[in-house]
Figure 1 (cartoon, rainbow, N blue to C red):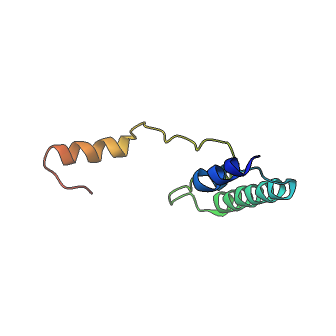
Figure 2 (spheres, helix red, strand yellow; figure 1 turned 90 degrees about the vertical axis):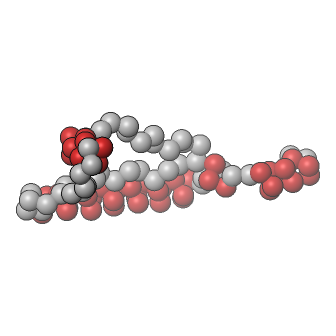
Length: 91
């Protein structure tokens, strides 16, 4: 790269989109595995009465766009929205 290109990258660069080394990739994979094991442990040993935890998202890798939020409305959310629209308080 030319000095001008280095300068432009320094000013407008996005470190989160940089290349990862093999070590960083392996550490991210290990981190994802540990989060999955923790999730499985909590779900397996839970009494089933409480709220089930959300499955962990994998660590973001460079160049991978973040997962878009699901825009669907749940039944509980619909009930709350209905109450709010009709003048009731949220529970």
